[in-house]
Amino acid sequence: MIWKNIEGYKVPYRVSDEGVVERWSARGQKWCVMRQRLRGGRAIVTLRGVDDRQKAVAVVRLMDEAFFDGYAKKHDLVILHKNGAKLDCAVENLLFCTRQEMGQRTGGIGRRRAVVRHDRKGGATVYPTIQAAAEQNGLTRTTLTRWMKTKQLDPRGYLFEVLA
Image (cartoon, rainbow, N blue to C red; front, top):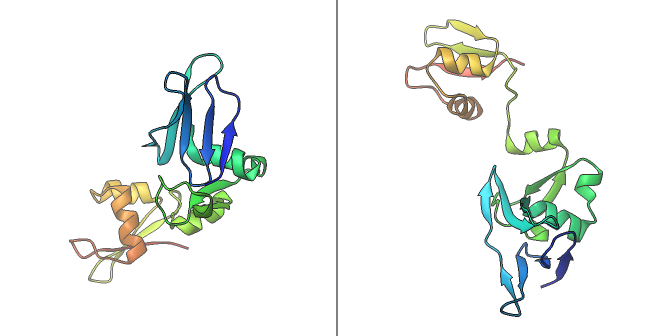
């Protein structure tokens, strides 16, 4: 395991190439593993700044600074997890891409796209956005998006699709 020091904080911290963050315990004279938790879809740790305030920092940002020399930040790139596990921040699991590539990889459908609802009798209804289609059909946007991706019928037999 390779360790790199994290600079700019009151307490000595370090991060490994496997995405483990540790802090130096002056009382115990040893390195202690810090607990990571998910917030906003990212693994974060809480570090104490020079001003003695706690700061939530994304582990992928620490990895970017320590092992990639801030490549993602310098080039305005997004960091994704290859295996989809947000708490797995190992170097070999991180992938740099643009925001557009991220949308293509994660299967995002833009909110401002028109949606058409087909019924069993051949009729069609057009909605200006996914949100409007979801609201007018008593669905959540997430459910509607999932059904459009999988081309699944809703319980009433409607088929929704995004207009190109």
